[in-house]
Length: 152
Length: 115
Image (tube, each protein chain N blue to C red):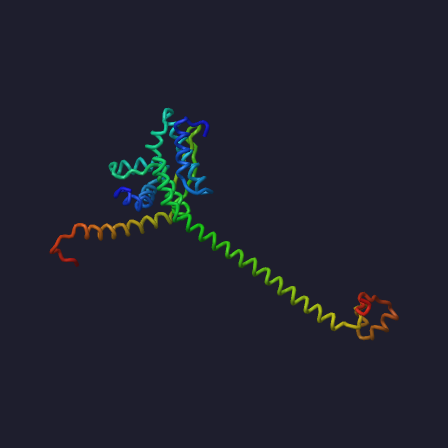
């Protein structure tokens, strides 16, 4: 902006003051105004505030036009954004609920499993001896008791 | 706000689409053509076009592209999309109906029978 003449810089600041709100839309608008000013200056090096007002528009009128045109669009955008946010929150709550349900089911299953194995062992021994009593197989072939609930 | 300003407000979108249906244009070029073709009756300064152009872009009726002109200048050219052409046809049809209706009201004379 420093490359612009004083009059055009003044004009830019006047437009900036007239544009309400902030954010992306304002930035986009002011960028386009700035570009228009650079183009004006390269076409008419002596252009000042009044020339800019004639060609680009009086800052006050631009502010009004901006408010009228952008307000409906911004409201629509905010509604869409709000809906997206709601959807995201619902999705997060859904995922958490599913995790809790899975955890509870797994926990209950685990408790039942432990209950079933109370006063017993978890042992490993070769599968080919499955038909024989496990005590005999362990005594003969060796095996491994990996979990003894009674010892807990 | 002046009476003409009120009429203009609702027409800028249609005017832009109409101009872009001829060829791709940049903002200042459009303001010049609007002024020229309306014999000065409709004047839309460049800065007033932008918000409407943004709305048209956001609705995918038009698209924009930057082109370097000369050493320092860049121009944003606007291009009408097929959906924009459809939108223009719709607007023209609606405008014709509205214009007929309005003319019927404004030119009505007593004793005239309405069909």
